[in-house]
Image (cartoon, rainbow, N blue to C red):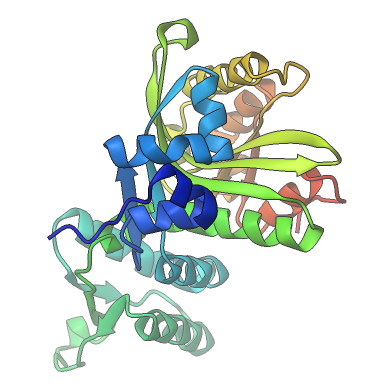
Length: 310
């Protein structure tokens, strides 16, 4: 049974673009997607998606992040230090098709273990995981904690990477609201460029259309939880160029898209090792690189306030 109810164009206008997308996605708890004819009916009433379409980008699908996805992402971001190893174990288990897994406790101190347990209890309260009984007392398993991951739709996608997208989107929404800046935020937008825009197809994690001092600004946040070498600078630059061309076509020739790659703190720390050249490669293309602790400062700076690292 399809529980989606796509509003008509007139209904979408009265509901508001955000609520119309959420309704079309079935009001997901975790992650939902709107595509096909359902999405095409909503594009004209959505200021950001319609701008992309008018500029020559076909909007193939758009993601909708539910409240539970946002709440989990905020917990993962706040407790990144305590949950880093656990998140790696959870991601590997889900990628292998398993919802049950053991986490090997690596925290060296009692204080760190207590911090990890507190963070995991918060995830349990949010319905993401259930902690199993500590029945196996064999010495080799005493430092392993058993867990069962929720099998609900969208959880696997969230834990294996989109938690960072949900976190970034929520930070942008919150900071824009604090600054009184009208902003339309869309997530997991799959676009297909026409041949004259390079003919590429890809999913952009977070797109933001903001009204700043009478000017419209386009922000693109690309979220990467994997190894730094998987960040393709040339591909990002090509898509950045296409977005700039789109702005020119819709009459914003004086504007350039603000682009940032968002990574967890552990990945950003690698700038001092052999992956440090990534920083230079991105900077040469006018693309910023920030971790989750610095993201709010970057958003504040781009939207006209005093930013910087936090």
